[in-house]
Length: 540
Image (cartoon, rainbow, N blue to C red):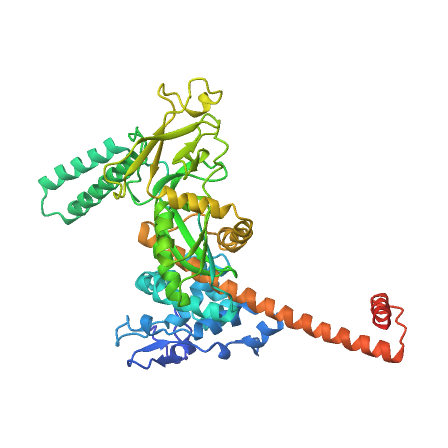
């Protein structure tokens, strides 16, 4: 007796859950600059119940997949394609993979497993990606493999295409930053003593097994954590913080810094991403810094210049950018800077003294006027006035009987003001911001850049980074901005469609007015009152 099957039945092999369909294996494309072939299906060959997918999407009046697909087709994908070997199993085309990822982010899907599911279920996603079905591991490897291109050349090229679609002006740009929580835990932070102990423990373990590579990597990481904490404490001391012993750091993500979160959410490890946007709210440049959002303005301006091909004429930023570095960079580029001073100089905060902005400098008298009207004259002149940190000291006011003494100083010698070389430029900027034309121009900033972060948080779900480390966070943030810029192109396309419809309705209305006037028609129903009033107006 045998169990061998005597009748041969054709049984095609069962497909794996994450493997492409059999017909998809034949849809290969050979790129021009090499003999490498990629899986690059044609979306026009996808059918739904016997009807083309294009026809179904057109019936739903959904323009998003078509606009995104057209913009991606305009890009040069050779930078991505040259990273693959010329032999082996054909990979998915970078054009299809990027379309899948960006379309998912536009719809608020950022989990790799959810993106994998979306590729199989969402019809618009099928159109943009060509109907490929990669698993979540392939999607993650694609993002990591092309990190440099996604952060650099591809971001700039796609942004240029979006600018061409929107036709927006780039003479004025607005900058802003926000706080986004890091992926690390906020309950496992350590202080300086614990960081030093971890380094010593790693050294002791390495001495017992000097050839263990894992112990060497652990020591390198612990040393990096301790050095980063030391640098952060040194910066805090330079800013005037006396006690830095309570400074904490994450042992798993040392680049993230501790910040006070918005909306009363306490303190957490976070990053400071920043953007520059034009009047159509298209992001022209982006950067991420753990602690200082003003420090990235020069590199963002460089990126904006590369994308638009010229230097923006006007830069609008809020009070957190009222710093020497931002002002000097704007002067060097000959950019009109509109930036108010942080806070309200005339009103000190609760339980705080009058700060320097509360004192008015009189250049003709070379003296400061305090909030009580007293004059502070020059009492110290630096030996080397050309030094970058040279400072002049003003004082000598009658502070003993002043009614505002408690709000100003507790020193027996009275209040003293230090003036630096950059203060003259800052005084000029303060006077510029008091001009009505400057105030009117500055009002545009909020509408240009504030909605960018609102859209990223509410629509695309960027409330916390999923990746760890500064480089990975920059990549994740740039992916969100790529998707956001594509959404701006979609919004512009819909706006242009509404404009065309409105123009057609205006033409129809004009024709109705002509007919009503020539034939003396009396419209008594369905909007007739509107036309009767219009016709009467035309007759008069």
